[in-house]
Length: 202
Image 1 (cartoon, rainbow, N blue to C red):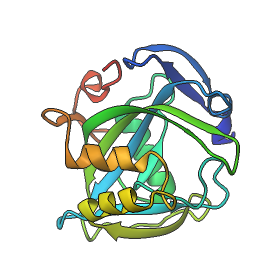
Image 2: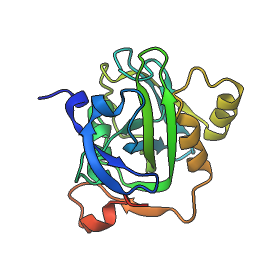
Image 3: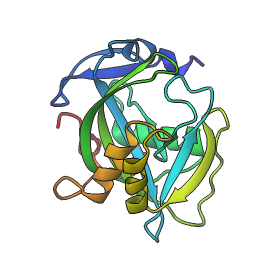
Image 4: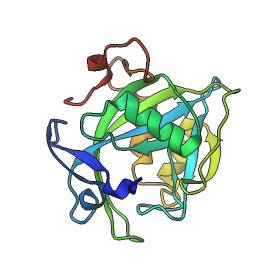
């Protein structure tokens, strides 16, 4: 099985329209290539969000606190498939029904590794059931914790250094969804129309 650095990502313009593909490794080399990504926040019945501290072996922003799970859909892969694949790989969780609450474009340079994040990021919310098991992969996740999203946003404002640079935008869109949340993402194998699963092109 090839490294995820060799997987392909979908290159997009700032409106989210796809125009090509590139490997993960190449897309994250300076100056960066804008590509489609997703960030998942799992939310428990009390409104707490699950955060993961990224493993030390990560090539971008290792040991920073980030959202529950993130990744890149491969060209032609729906957000539902990609997000549930990464939930399974990183956390041993899922499948989870997901709702897109916003999109934003961000750019960040990692001073520790020299890599660049330049992403068109779909922010996805999933409801977490307290009895659901979590089996985090130590090569992906150093630590897990639950946090109140409003308190987390305030902490990010006070001192963003312990956090991945995209987390502020992800939490902001969870707290203030852009328009009516669109239930565009359902677990693989459901009866939903595949065309309704993908929100790329926004």
